[in-house]
Image (cartoon, rainbow, N blue to C red; front, side, top):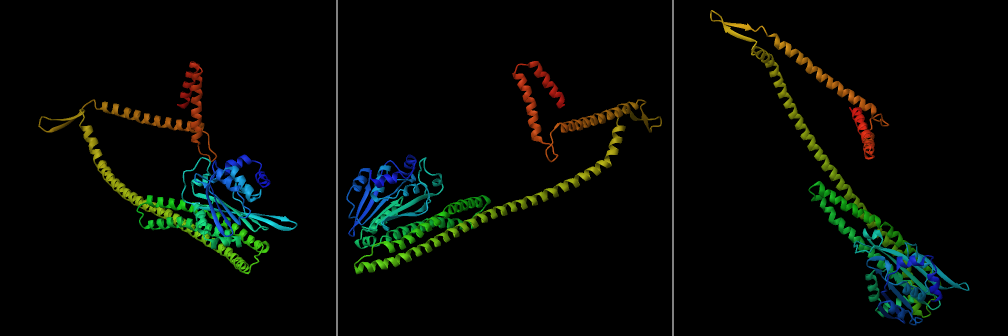
Amino acid sequence: MSVAQSTIWGCHENEGAIEGELFSKTSLIDCLDITDGTATAYRNLDNGGAREFLQMDSGKVDCRILFIGAEPSNSNLLRATPEVFHDICGACGVSKRFLPALRRQHSPSRDVQYVKGKPVRQEFWYTAVLRSMKTPDLDAKAHSSLRVLGWTRVYIWAGYDLVRNQTRAIVLRGPEKMKEEMFKHFQDPSQTSYLTRHPMLLHAILVEDLIIQTYDFLDEFSNQIYALEPQSNIASNIHAYTVRSQAFLELARQITQTAGDYGILRSAIRLLQKEQAWVAKHWQKPVDEDDASFWLQNQEFGDDIFDYFFGEVDIVEGYSKLYEERAKIGINEGFNMVNQGDAEINLQMAAESTEIAKATRQDGQSLQALQILGTLFLPASLCSSILGMGFFTTQPDDSGRAQFIASNKWWIFIAFAIPLTIVSLGIVSILNAWQRWRNHRRRMKLPMGPDGVVDEKSSSSSDRSRFGRMRHENSNGNIKRSKTGFMRAAKESV
């Protein structure tokens, strides 16, 4: 292992944990070499192919770009083994500060090596977050947030040899589309010369592609919003508005989750802008007049392009905030419609209650008429009942006229009716008094709450604990004592 490799791998104490968190068991690496304006592509290098490639002489390679993708089932894992990644970092001379930055979201950083007060080597790295609505089948080690909204943390490392004017770059977890466009773009020799004549143009192309990917992802939000907003005119019931509000709520949650991505992208562009100025100061200028003119032209272009990228990020973030506000409007609209539907139902229930009250009033008036009729006929019914008993009768006298005759035992009716009435009233009074006494005694035993109200929960728990003790006694075999306790508890309840 080279000195560069040993310094890289010794940068963190818990090396085994880093291996498990970052690397997979197989490698799949792509490389683009540019030598004297000619691009050579090396595709789909496995473990053995990658090591053979790294052992090749790279002293004459002006620019080398390595692409290491992410595992489809876990976007946090690099498609490289720890050994192959060590060799890549050693061959490119990656700083030992870079590896810990791979474990988490890290701010952009740089490192410069000096010899006798002059810079001889410069390297820097930055990151960006790319999102996706697709959530593929994930393994158990995948981050839980990937199950809500797909994301990939892209890392880009670049190193410049200021003595040889050579460029090395590593793109980690870059999207497949970005890689294919890079390979296609630099098949043209006129395009490959740009990378060798001005090193920062590579990062201008990469950042532009990252911004385009972010734009494309925003279309996923806009498409959902444009699909949900017209549904307010066709929703026919409260359930439809509830479902629509839930969809807007999920959409707003996803948009909010991406709010930090734009700050990360701005930090990367800010670093590149500073590196652009640093390269302009320390990179060796071409001697040829045409190359010098090209250098100055692209230096001015680089100064402008990163300012342009800041404006593009502001526009993307503005659209994101706009979509978030529209999603919130959709949420409020849905809830308002649900509340309005509830209010309409309440009004209907109030109208029905009014109708029920009117019907009840009419029934009361009918009952009042029956009570009046009963009051009128009750005396006559009482008289007819009394006179209809066998104690009173009529019979004709000698002249043929009806004669009213009362039995001499009419007092039997009064003797039975009055005592029975008194006994009935007494029984009812005794039952009412016993019920009031029992309720009063029960309230006296119940615990009171802090507001002076009886605590029914404590009462039920105390009753359960009392009968629980009796069951406990029974379970211990003391049957006689258990029965006595039960009878005592029953008497206390009565």
